[in-house]
Image (tube, rainbow, N blue to C red; front, side):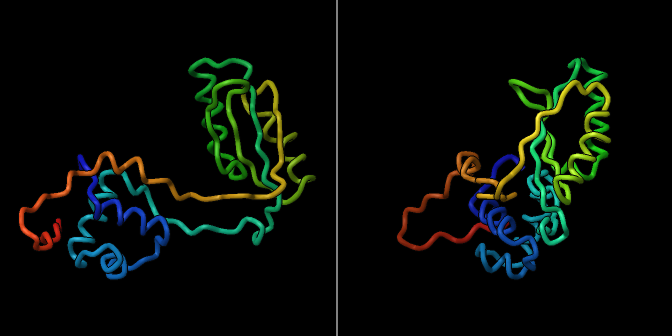
Length: 177
């Protein structure tokens, strides 16, 4: 899939808003019939634009009231040592996000926990004991202003195919792939 057209972009937008749409509902919203819509969704999945579908769970409802941002400083940043630390971080369920960062620190983690005491115990028992960890610096979320997994898709507009031009006043036929 080399280019994204208007229909593909609309499909991605709609699925970001509601991943539980039936194919018929999705097709109706983007202006396609069911079969071409299904083929396009499959093509977007196969091309890696759609990585999966999931339920968004409210962490507060399941007793995870603390969200901590932990900057983790590694003692050394060499290949094998860093890969070992990355593997260890991937295995920790409380770490919901991890990024290799520039500037001060090596990794920025988002960690969830029941409460401050639980987080403190977790940090002392798990995080500080990860391989090659030199130091931890923690900040706590005092409230969420915005939390979204939806991505801005405007960057795909430049990758879209050019619309077909018509010389008559008739509405162009809808392209269905």
